[in-house]
Length: 148
Ligand SMILES: [Zn+2]
Image (cartoon, rainbow, N blue to C red):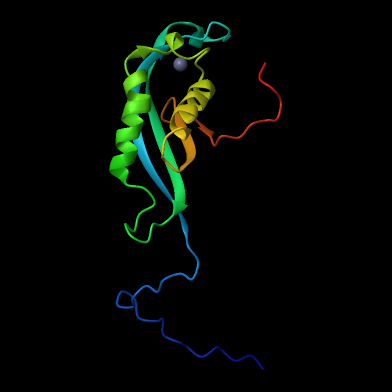
């Protein structure tokens, strides 16, 4: 015979203190930036071959354990200061072709990764938005094949 389960009220919310996870959680901390730059892609079959500009959005994702002393993975202010010095300073309002060889979004993302991975940031991923709907992501992976 079917019997409905006994109704159990949900545990009270809001007043229950969060208990600490027995594991050390790895948390992603991200900050978004914006810069403007021009580029042209002579091998592109479409209009991207012509000189044009973008407002690039850059998401820098860091990942790591929460430091027991600070309670943080990384300080947002440190992310800002490092990205400003390593990426935004060199790239903002430039012609990217002068700095990065064949500056597709992919090559720009790898260039940014290479700059940031050499810093103290616990870098996890770089996302470069070329438009509001298109981005590339890079996490330092390599295909295994040497560069052409
Ligand atoms: Zn473009």
